[in-house]
Image (tube, rainbow, N blue to C red; front, side, top):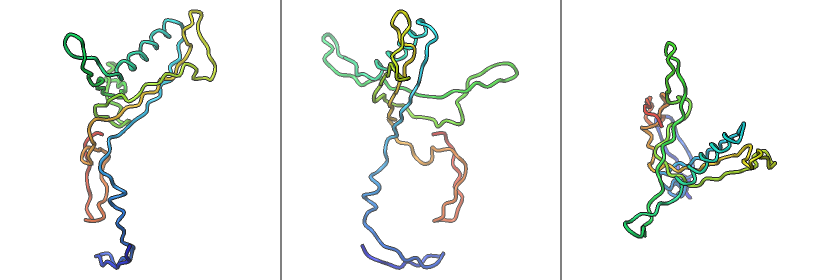
Length: 171
């Protein structure tokens, strides 16, 4: 560590120079997300639909057996694309649009899927044994790095150059 004085167009700055910057920034990271969905069934038919949703995500998170004949190769798990939708009413016609309040995601791999069959802390079933409610937790990891030019959000001030930076994009 060394103390140094630096002259800038805004005045004199005295500070401590450190060699910690390479330690603080290790490079860009892939984003990870955890989504929790509490699903409650009104009857055993809905409980079976919830079971199928949970099974679909579990299957999508697992590697595939590939290869001709003996299937002796391991394939990568499926890639998923998550989007959150809103309904928009255009003169009586309902259309689905991307929700502008939720960030967009690049293609993701499912890291893990967990199903809690007692989300209320109590085991409760219908007459056929199907659970009344489950909590589905899905861990996702994006497969591509997000760059600053891809973020939307308006304008911010770059104090180093004293200029406005306009941001367009959607991640």
